[in-house]
Length: 410
Image (cartoon, rainbow, N blue to C red; front, side, top):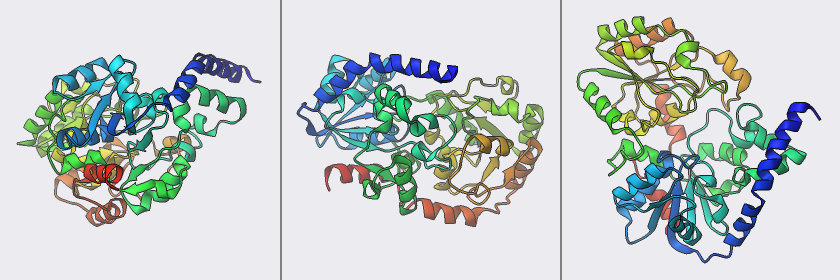
């Protein structure tokens, strides 16, 4: 066995042995009597109030009081405190109230894996996985390279150690809401789940595009939202949302971004350039702070609360562009490192065919594409509409209600 492989297995052996007692807790949790009307929700790694789980929880807590008991579970004590201050029910996963709620809940709703709530207390519950994006990049079992793929491609002792240490990665959920029939085969393959487990409802985070949500500022930067709303009054807003690179590279630095040239361009076009780097990026640039029309939002900003204010989206390989299709506005794909990115990641589709907007492989080309769009040219509207209708059966802001009906009424 190679040295690195031995070290890796040793690390996972230690983690797996430390969690053996928790596996016993999991099996004992199957004995808990569960209440059909109690539902616990959690997002991502359990640290944030965000994404599909956030908006589904708010739909239930704001509109279904008396019908269901919706509880948010988070490891982040600040999130729990803020939700409790707004009169929502929220607990930490190993608090006494959290343990009681988790053992009582019949339904566990997450947008990734059930460690967002507490996997170890989920035995016998129904699992609803909202997931956190429509995939351009291959995910889970379909991904053969890139971050996280090692868990799903492992064999032998490694797979056993991964399972003992992180069993939620391999659990089979009872229900997976998706946005259209087109995605059924892709998600079924990615999660290795039967196709009938996937229900077409839409994604709750898109409901904010169509209607207001009380208290959706929790878990986000309210000051960033107010700043964007203020800037919108007199400017065109460009939003740059790059995806995460496995090497943690800063896209501004890697693409030789010219902030002075960009700021001058923005002044000429009465526009503001807003960016938000991926929360997992190792570094963030501070150079844009020197320019009046270039703004970088904090990592905790809820982009779905902001997207409807945006005039042009700039992204690369992020699934955010699927979300933006529902707003029917132009987008630019800043793919300066396409060849390098494709060496580390696999896509489900041909990149050039499945991205409805100009491809900019350099900073100068990015400015050129933005100039055309701000000047009124929109060559990709028909392609966007075609892709939108393929990806979304419903475009009405009622995804949360459809999921509620599917869980509790049908």
